[in-house]
Length: 120
Image 1 (cartoon, helix red, strand yellow):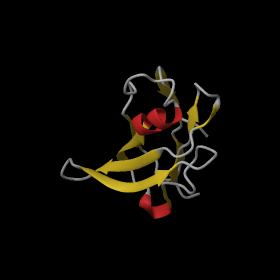
Image 2 (image 1 turned 30 degrees about the horizontal axis):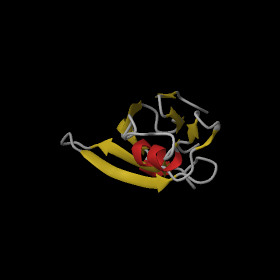
Image 3 (image 1 turned 90 degrees about the vertical axis):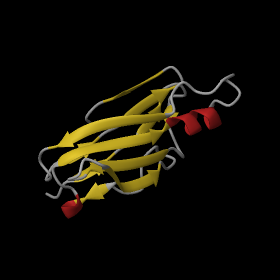
Image 4 (image 1 turned 180 degrees about the horizontal axis):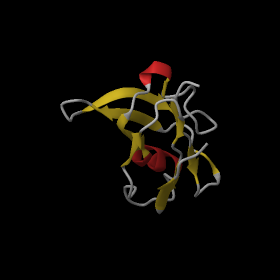
């Protein structure tokens, strides 16, 4: 089985998928700089349309998902947030040891907090 990296975002404040959130996936290069390798917007189900990376593009190493939570929260909670959202870009850094596995990294987000876990 070829490896892949996927994600989805749930808006726990509303109890719904977070549609329209910008997602960027970076990996660290040999010279210790972050390189953008994929980007997507979440669809109506809070997911990217396809895996962010899959097959031979998935290699062992250090990766970081960056979720554009600030723009999303401001748009969705416009009338409920009197100031700028607390969260702006939410980075989730993770390591791929086995490039043949499926790495599903979800984000649960609300105006007051966020969490993540390794999904299936």
